[in-house]
Amino acid sequence: MKLFYKILCILLLVVTVSTEAKTINQAIVAQMFLDNQLDSGQYEIEIVSSRIKQKEYNNEDLFIKPLTLKKPIGLYTVLVTIVSNGEETESSQVRMRIRKFETVLVSTDRLKRHTELSNLNTTVERVEVTNLRSKSYLSVEETLGYRLKGTVQKSIPITSSMLVKIPDIVSGRETTIIYAGSIFKITADGVALQPGSIGDFIKVKNKTSKKIIVARVIDSHHVAVDP
Image 1 (cartoon, helix red, strand yellow):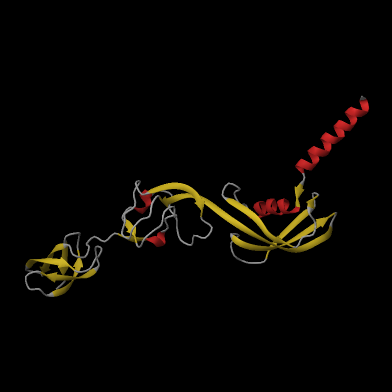
Image 2: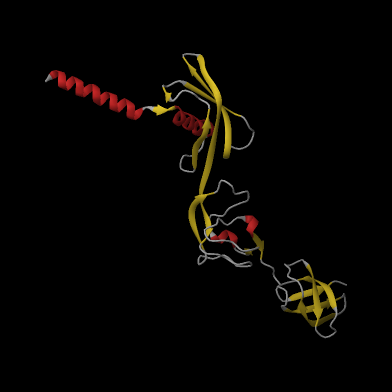
């Protein structure tokens, strides 16, 4: 009976040790998180290819040297050196894929060009942002005053490169043209032929004379011809 309990204890110990044992790839991933101070809730690391022959990690020292100056994201190659008892036992290249996730503003439907964003056509979700090259947004309030440059598909993160400032005057809008000098001020009805924001110079058609002039946008309904 005592022999049975001894064998049982040994088996439980073996199962516990094997459960806690790390593979060398798991140890490399853990070291990458530590060396680069990456948040495990924000990043995922997958070993794509490795020339390391050792399979199990036995508490050796791991040294990781990047083979590129770029930020650790996307496809990333490093040199991994394993040191045991002060002696190098193996050194080889390891290629990994580092994915980044953030909770950002995304489209809830296919959105057309010039759409203004709102809570009805966007939501905030945790999505992969590994390949984003421009600023993403945390809320729809950050996009106020802007609209989409072009069509955006469903479930796509909204970035600054997708947005353009909403013009104060749009093409086709009726506007008042102001001709002003030091001692006079004349107004005329006109039609904007181009969109523009305050301070921009746009083409405007004088409805009376039918002439096309260049005027400065004052507000959403007025343009001025500088003397």
